[in-house]
Image 1: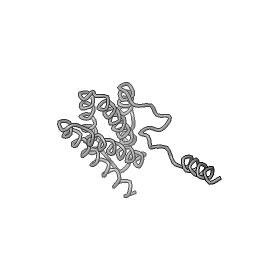
Image 2 (image 1 turned 90 degrees about the vertical axis):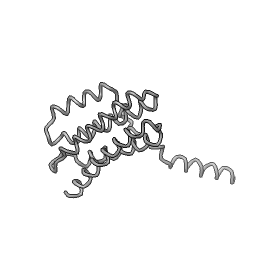
Image 3 (image 1 turned 45 degrees about the vertical axis):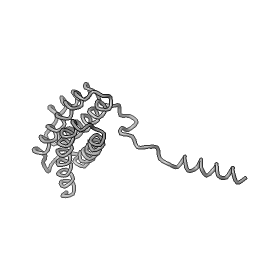
Length: 153
């Protein structure tokens, strides 16, 4: 009787415990080159108010792509994508305005990108760290600005 009760409590605990957090929602597929190119084309056509969110989304997808490439051992592709992330984050920082649409959502994406870059920093080799650190610093700077603008509203 006591053993059955222990198993029931264990089963209840396991059922109530959330699954491990994933980097993607169930309906989101891992980003690839085509997804990134399509989003870049969409940014060019978007209204200026929407570009902040779309650029944050692009930074997020490019970061995830870079992390996946690095984990797969393709350091050259990962580094090339990180350079693009760093440059895009710098451009976003320079063009961020108060009238952005979905600014809070952009800030959340930027925060998650910074988190993933921080994870990448801890797993990267000594030679790769300067680029990851620069990219992380740039994304953190944009994230902080976005957060400050969210709180101003």
